[in-house]
Length: 141
Image (cartoon, rainbow, N blue to C red; front, side):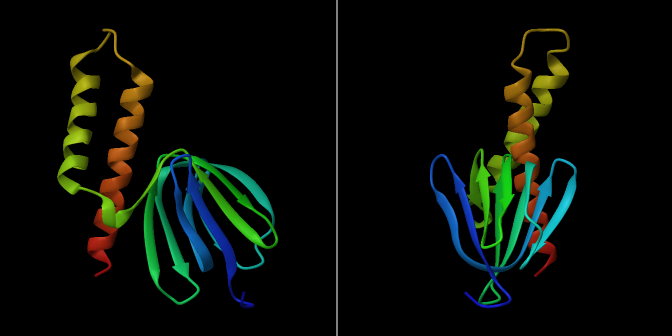
């Protein structure tokens, strides 16, 4: 490992998403945006659904979407334990738009009715996170 990089692990219950050296990590905590660099102070925080950006040790940008989870920064390694995660390149934009519309329709059509609010909120958060990262990728090109 180089002086200007740190070991980064991004994992979910289903799979390891990323493992390698990173120069920078951008992630959304429940209290706001975070940028992690080498020698960052140790910390543990909850993560909100949203995009994750990594500048790898070889200066390659990688983008992911997580549904939430935990971030642990230790002296030699930083770990994201995601509730669910996917690479931005695996996102189906049409499916994300459709999922967003379905979740919004569920909220608007069932006011006072019986719906699974946690599930609808989770679906909406994931769709919005996916669309947000796709928009950012499009604008950075």
